[in-house]
Amino acid sequence: MSLEEEEVPFDLPDLPQFSAVESNKLSIIGRTLNPECQRMKDLILDMPRKWQVYDRVRGVALSPTMFQFVFKYEHDLEAVMRKRVWTFNEWSVVIDRWVEKPPDDYLQYLLVWVQIRNIPVNHYTTKAIETFGGFVGNVDVVAFDPSKAQSQDYVRVRVFFDVSRPVRRTKVINLPQGGSVTLRYDFERIQKRCHHCQRLTHDKDKCPQLIQERKDQASERPKRVLEEKQRREMVISRDDPLYGVLSEEQVGIDTMTGRRIINPEVLQNMREYLLAAEGGEKRVRIERVRNSVMELQNDPVGQRDFLRLEAPPKVTSNVDFEKGRVFGYGLKNVENQIVSRRSEGVAKSPMMEKEQRGVASDPLKGKDFDPPLLPEFFECSTGFSSGYAEANSSGTSRIKGGRRYRPPKRLRRFKPRLVDAEREDATGKDDGPPVGKQAAKRRAEAVAGEFTRVARRSKSEVVPNGGLPNL
Image (tube, rainbow, N blue to C red; front, side, top):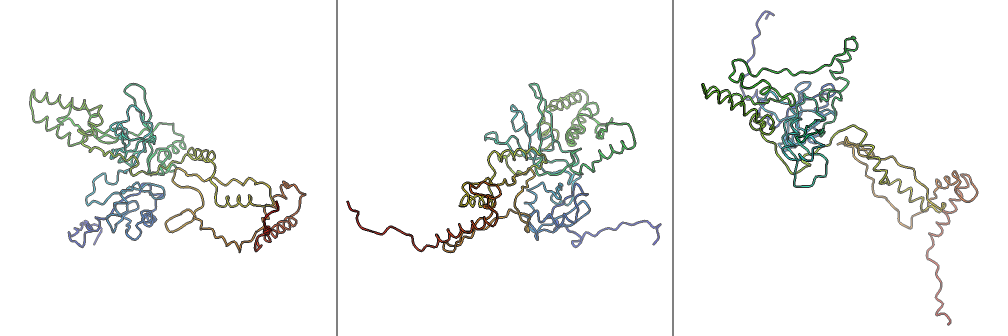
């Protein structure tokens, strides 16, 4: 064997022992969006814990960015697919069911719920909401019921979001009667993203745009505005029957959504329709094709049904259907919760109530004292809350105090509260002369002995029956 020999490819035999198609039918394929922060080895070990399937799934690392999980049962696989979006190390991962021959856009879209806010009151309709959600991605489900009361200030839609595009936060809409309104979008279950370019594939410190700007400043090059221009592939050539009938802007890529304006199958039908006629009939057909496209130019629903051939989204009356948390890291929500908790009153912990009960029943003091304020516990927008917690096999959980054990009455003993006596000595609130620690201890023990003597009496003293009074 020499280096000059031509490499001959190996033909893999089409035999059952070489094929894993049957075992792959109950599996999902996924990829990480930020490989620098998502270690594949940890992902394979941690995702079964998140899915709560443990020994009913087997993970396989296909590459530094691709992975596969083979499930033992069909219902476990469906539960994982139904609860998307999934994250690892706070960065999103794209998953989909295994297919033998994946399409070109396989693992390119993330099925995610989006909350749309600030919708114009005169356009609260299903079709308008579908159009508003189309600016983010292809709408799959609209959770809206106009016949029921709506307590939230948003409407939820589920879309197929292209992970190569930035996450949209706002969109300006010009109203037909004049004026404009700015829609706001919030993505559910998506935690981290680049806060500069709003993409899900890197952190702000690794943003290519910021790195390039730093290089320009370091090399003292003149400041330039970097504009990303999407390269458009020519759809209509000179020998195309549609040349001169439709413009490139009418059949190319929509710069707003990144999808084709007209489906290739529809374009092919237009070409065949024009080639099937000659002379005057061909000119009539040209006008029909041109007018049909022009009429649908301002009709988003018609473009979806007739030009792009996309299936209409499902509409459900359950407005909280598959609802997930929105991970925002602003401090405004935390401040609002602190203000509301202070206005309503901080909930007392068992330790605080016990201390207050002891102070109220202390015979050494004539009035209660103000207990120290405990730290405020509030729920933050990331879904995690502060408080007393302990670790277990499935994460962390709140510590639940056991039932209080109280001895029977005959075995109870009065315990002197030295802390309260010392506090009286330190603050000087007692009416008597100030005493030291030893004096406070002797005073507390004396009172405790008096209480113990009274509690140990076998029977109460009553007035003897002396008969009827003399009248």
